[in-house]
Length: 111
Image (tube, rainbow, N blue to C red; front, side, top):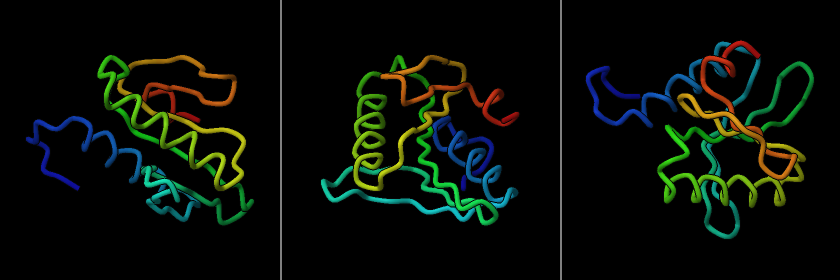
């Protein structure tokens, strides 16, 4: 959580994702994988039991941050046997390896 006047847009994006998940029927955790990688959100839907892995990354053009988030997500998908993952960005959209959706925050909030 941060103040609105923060210059760290990535933190603000993470806060928006977290608040949206908490408003829904999701239990939310932050995790570290066995190989030391981080994933912003590991969620379980309280009603269906569905598990999801979600990273928040301001933009894909920041290669260092994006690669770190992508590797963390792939590692967690393997470790926790979750077949798909999501990277929420400000405005980028694509699919990586048919298993990872990169979505802009506005579209993700509508799903």
